[in-house]
Length: 115
Ligand SMILES: [Zn+2]
Image 1 (tube, protein in one colour):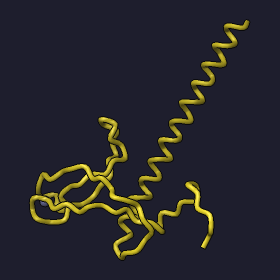
Image 2 (cartoon, helix red, strand yellow; image 1 turned 90 degrees about the horizontal axis):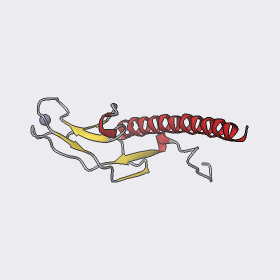
Image 3 (tube, helix red, strand yellow; image 1 turned 30 degrees about the vertical axis):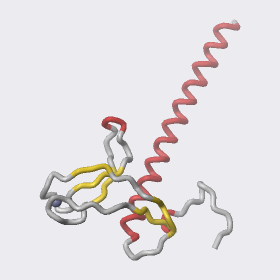
C-alpha cells in the first residue's frame, strides 16, 4: 500500500460514494445518474430517477461522503466516481484553454501598447 496519497494518484477503485437512498413513487429505490448536459450549469451533478422509468420521480442527489471501499455494491459507485473524475478533467482542460487564450490577448495588448 502506498503511503502518500495526492489528488493526482486518487484511485477510484478504492473509494465509494455514499448517498442517501430515495424511494420513488413506485416504492423502489431510485437510481442515481449523472447530468451529462450543461443545461443550467448542471453538468456533472447527481440526480435521482425512477429505476424502472415508470414514474416521474426526480430529485437532486447530494452525496453524503466519499469513503474507502467497504461494501459489496461498489461497482456502481466506482463507475460514478470515475465519471466525476472524467468531468473534472474536462473542466480543467477548458480552464487551461481559457487561460492560454487570455494570456495571448494580454501579450498582444502589451505588444500593441509598447510598440
Ligand atoms: Zn418509480
